[in-house]
Image (cartoon, rainbow, N blue to C red; front, side, top):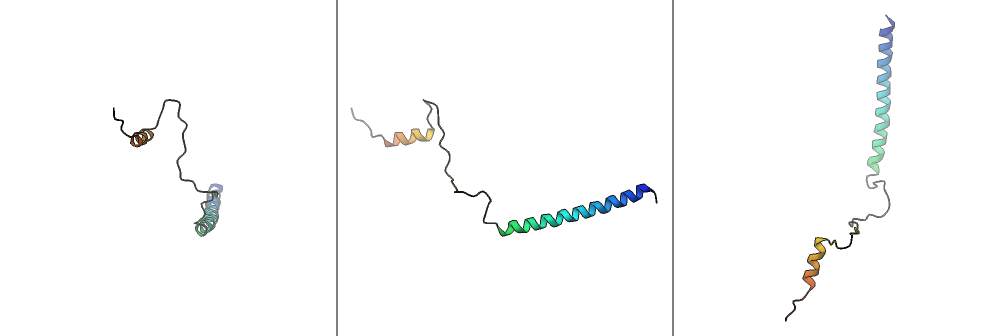
Amino acid sequence: MSSLVVDLIVLGLTYVVLIYIVAILTKARLNRQKNDSQDDGEGGVENYTPPKIDLPPGIVWPSDIRSKNRDKTPVNF
């Protein structure tokens, strides 16, 4: 056999062994993650409130305008 055939056979065997090792390591890591499904890994307190955005002077959110109009009572002249 020529050296090219021997090199191809060794390369193929090496590829198969490396794929097997990677598959075994990945499977072990996936099994550990399934056991800890309750933990998302971030920690801390969950806060679902949207952030308060500081707007420039004269700019008002549309939701704030509607709430101010509802609170006012009509004025009689």
